[in-house]
Image 1 (cartoon, rainbow, N blue to C red):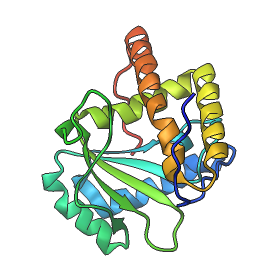
Image 2: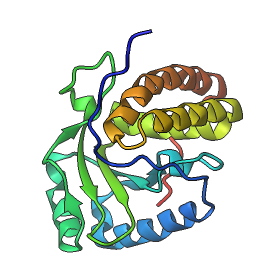
Image 3: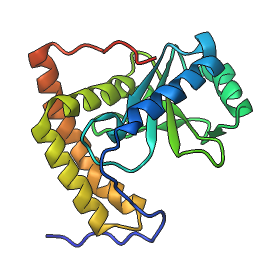
Length: 201
């Protein structure tokens, strides 16, 4: 087995048991975002591990904001910045094997919580794009499959144990698993007739 790459300490990786308060925290944030954004948003969804009941996670709310197009989202990001939310790079790209790293299917805008507030990641993605659909499919498959959820949780706990002070190392181990889960989730979606769920907000 090859040695793991060396990753310099960056940010500690702390997983906590699932907290029943996470959905309520998301709901309160979604209401706030809806007031700030108004009709600029098509939908707001709770994504990531904190959106999967029973799954341990880093205590970070991941929220997907769906818009008609990223070029037209300037008014949305301006409203969020005015409310104190912090913007990352002008345009970021999610990663997925088989798609070019600069594919329009992977483009997004990224923002974080105002200084001093609970950690939150806002992923602004275009309706109909691969990355917007994938985030919801991944979440719903883990919600529906206790076995997949348990194995994914085991992988996360081992990755955190190997890289307790490096988020880069933690993600290095997790990244291939996203593709495995996607394959299983795609088969599940075909079997159950999964469709894009109604918006949470």
